[in-house]
Length: 121
Image 1 (cartoon, rainbow, N blue to C red):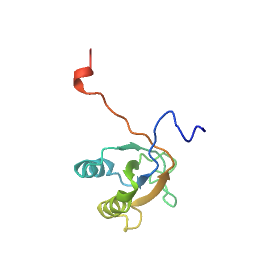
Image 2 (cartoon, one colour; image 1 turned 135 degrees about the vertical axis):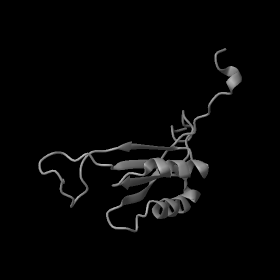
Image 3 (cartoon, rainbow, N blue to C red; image 1 turned 90 degrees about the horizontal axis):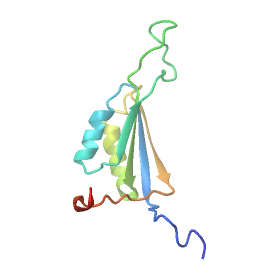
Image 4 (cartoon, rainbow, N blue to C red; image 1 turned 30 degrees about the vertical axis):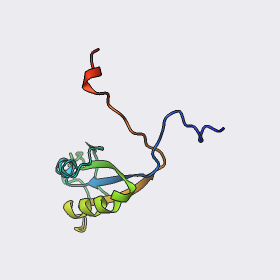
């Protein structure tokens, strides 16, 4: 029996990660939207730098951008719907708003949180 036949950590192989690069921010609002849709496997962070083709407005001084990157992990059957929703909500059809793409995750695992009765025992 190989390691793949009986993995030490059970994994799910039908998940996708949707990534949004938002040049003008807005990741928090998208996270709230996803939360209301029942998608809680999300996170975002701010990044520095200028998108390709945009020069700093302050000469040689570094620009402090609003660029944020949002990641959401969803099941494969939800990926197209969530992608379209984020695309429309973030107005990705407008030039310079950002980039959105989907990656297939080869492995992801479910975390089971213990019931409260077991906490602190």
